[in-house]
Image (cartoon, rainbow, N blue to C red):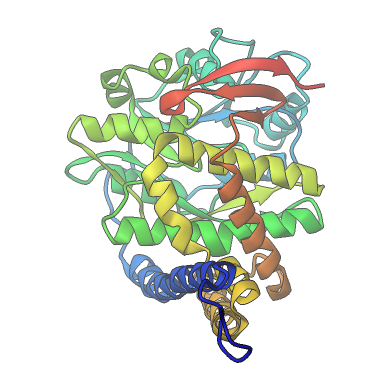
Length: 395
């Protein structure tokens, strides 16, 4: 028997499990703090590089797949035409049908840029599960130039954009060029949360992976390549059923022995989320997309969420977790300040940062269990290797 002052022979295990779980979360949070300090250094190194020159006299065709009248769509499109670029520039816009509300923005763009070569292609295109790829395939016959620059409709660029793209693509061994970007809130409070997540979480991750040689990302912000390279990797039809078409295009380019280059300039991604539901759908789709194409790398990115990890550690072990919460938030503030300094703009108020990072972390966790996503008005089922199939049309 156990005496009144003696501990029981078999103490409950719950406190031990709580302690070790808290310690694990604390270690991950500490690793995340180290990562964010490294990200500050990587951002400095990335933007200190000189842009490559050359290739800025060849003709360029801008391919702009559109869907609906997004906020500031006309301004975004116009920024791609307001370029310090000596070569001829053609813009080809594509929509899925004649009722698409993006057509009005294209018509206004034509009226505001008389003499510029702006084409509009309408029609659903091939019956691909990836409707953006179907749109691009439908637009391609209208492209006149050998240098193709694909970019999403919610992107805006500076006047040196095309010169930097052409210069990077002209370098030996480069098969495609993509671009880093920051967020810009276009739709109210929830779009501020989205912009903060892009600028202060996604951007440092992209730059750190690229500068550290751990990843060779290819993003929908920009995919520039020659028509010959596109044909070499199988054309747009090769990516008909792939959700992460940008990632897959980059992988296909790398498989030819060429590399994907990221020049030291920063694009702007317009965030239009007007509700928490819209924000959640976008973040979950994004996270699930990355999990689908690079599951182990995605799982390893858990260390890029030091603040949520520290918060959970503080719940389980306050003496360890609470100091980490303060440290993680301080470093996140320093990282945000570094991003804003390189961007010459602030993407969101500082108090939005914890909400943005926690939203990203919840989407990260949700990505491991979700198999159905919303994308541009369609419900899609995710299969293995990043493939998708239509489920139903959203109403």
